[in-house]
Length: 231
Image 1 (spheres, rainbow, N blue to C red):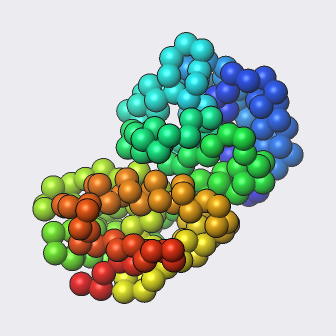
Image 2 (cartoon, one colour):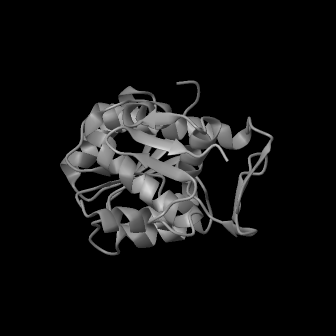
């Protein structure tokens, strides 16, 4: 790693906490550890960590409350690592501002890959590379400012949703396979993660489509992937 990125680990399971801490330190990351939601918020305000790994099932307050409080002050990446598997739970936490969601049990290699993606996102926040404005029907994306408008009203996308939208627009008219999208966004491609990708796409569609049952922009190619309309 080129710099000493600090990761705040919020986890009340001591074994999982020790495991993640060990691997992150081996990779050169600095770590902070919190076992409760209130401790996590306190450490966040005191240290301003670069990336947050967050379990939702904390002993004092729900992890969703932690996300909301962090998002009031920072747009730094939040990766949720939770045993909750319900799609509605995933969509809700993404809508609140989380960038990524992993379901326990997880492979440490996948976690490290997602952290690397979050690191790249941090770097891209400093120097955006796209300076054009994209218009299609009632959707406008200002890539220079990182703003998205639907019917001339600004909508908030999470960093992961915005990255997905940029990828789709950059390849509009082309069918992007599940694996291709996973590799471009998360840095790996596993067919088993198509379900997680579907959750992100559902959340993105709800924000930019007038009618999610009959989408105008993001079309599903059943069993293959997704395609953004040409115009």
